[in-house]
Image (cartoon, rainbow, N blue to C red; front, side):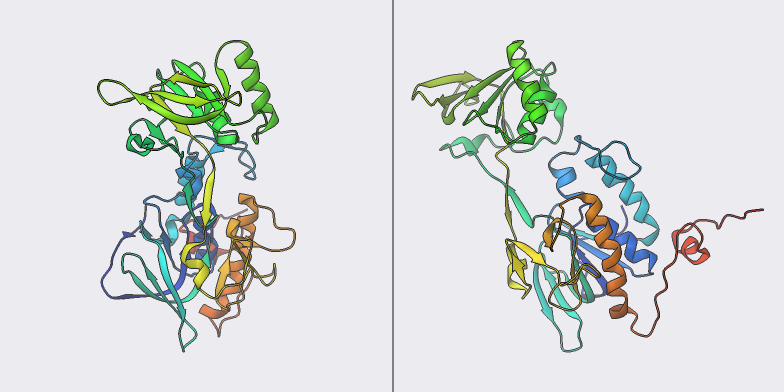
Length: 356
C-alpha cells in the first residue's frame, strides 16, 4: 500500500480528498490519476476495502465486468495494484469530522485524529456512511464479544470444528451457515420468524440441509445465556413462539442482524440529503448541491440509481472529469484512451506498444 499516513504535521494542501476507501473510492483514485490529479484517501476503518473486506472478504462477487468471480479481498487487492502508479496517500483509522468552504473556494477538512487538509475538491465514496453491526440485545452478552460472540467473520478457520449458532435471516447469516456446514462440528441457524430476507436459493439449500440433518433451524429469539465453570459462554437460551425457552449448546455465536447505517458528521456539511443518502444534482458530474463536492457509490442518490459496484465505477469516472475544472481551471481536458494514449501510458508507467 502506498504512503500510509496517520497524523502528518501541519496542514496538507491537496487537489482531491476522497472520503471512503472501499472499491468505488479506490477506483476514484484511478480515474483522477488518469487526469494527473493526486488524491488523499481517508477512511474510518484501519484497512482499505470498505464493506467488501470488513464484512465479506471471502464472499464471491460475480458482477464485475470481465471478472467472472472474485472475492471482496481480491477485488480490493487488484484495485490497489491498479492505482499504485498514482501513489495515493491513505489516512486510515480516522473519520472526517469537519468540512467547511473557504473564502478562496477550497475546503478545510479535518479528521478525528487532527489531520488537516486544504483541498480543491472532495469525493464522498462512503458507502452507507459509517456503519455499525446491529447488536444482540441480551443483557451481559457483550462480555463475550470477539472471543465467542462475533458480528463478522474475519478468519473462517477460527470457526471450523466448533459448535456454531448463527443468528439472522438475511444473506450474510444464510451464506455463512451454508459455508460452515461440513466444516464446523455443528451449525444451528436461529431466526425470529419463518420468513427469510436471504436469496430464495440459499433458503432452499438451508432447508434441504436441515432435512438431511446436516444443520438445524430454530425459530425463536435469543433471551439469555449460560456459562460454564470457566466463565465461558456455553449455552444460548432461546424463547420460541410457543413461549417455551430452550437451551442451545454452543462454542461460538455469530450474529448477522444487518447494519445500522449512520451518515454521522456528513449530515452537518450542508449537503442535500434524501433518505440518508446524498442527492447529486445531475448524472453528468455527480456533484452535490455544494460545488466542488462530489458523491459516488452507495452514498449517493438520483433518479434510476442502482446500488451496484459497477455503477459506482461509472460515477467515479464522470465525477473525475466534473472535478477537473476546479483543479485545472485554465486547462482544456481531453478525453483519452488508455489503449492508445502515450501520455496515459507515461502516467501509468507502461510502454506504448508499437504496431507494425
